[in-house]
Amino acid sequence: MTRLLIMGVAGAGKSTLGLALSQALGWRFLDADDVHTRAAKDKIARGIPLTEADRSKWLAAIKPIFFDTRASIVLACSALRAAHRHMLKPDHLVFLHIEPALAHQRLFERRGHFAGPNLVQSQFATLEEPSQGLKLDATMRTDLQVQTIMDSLSLNPS
Image (cartoon, rainbow, N blue to C red; front, side, top):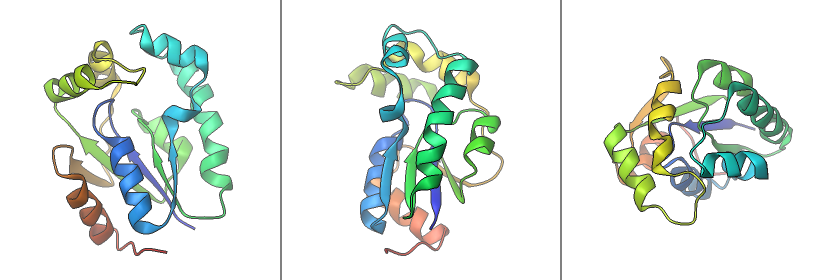
């Protein structure tokens, strides 16, 4: 059983990559956005960044799902601070790196999601780039990102 975390700011492509990777590997996929409370989603939709107290409650709700699964799992989660990543304790970490202007553009163009472009500044202000793990360019095609992760981390389909 392997736990892999794909992290980065809003708009980096975590969910898209996480789903594609989980399908390629035959692993379970968890999108941390699905674990947000209605109140947190409403707050984010209004452009109000989550506090550390909000994030702590959210991560506490994610952790048992991430750990209690009996199958290997890919988690797409911002996990912006080192403390967030430490709490989740993934076996593998993938950081999707994106420039602020592109993150803003992606969030501006994205439809049907509660996070908008007004959160970009606070996301980058909160971000503590990891010193370990695999760093991927968010502008790479998803299929190339998947192959790079599988090759770099020696992951094989289940």
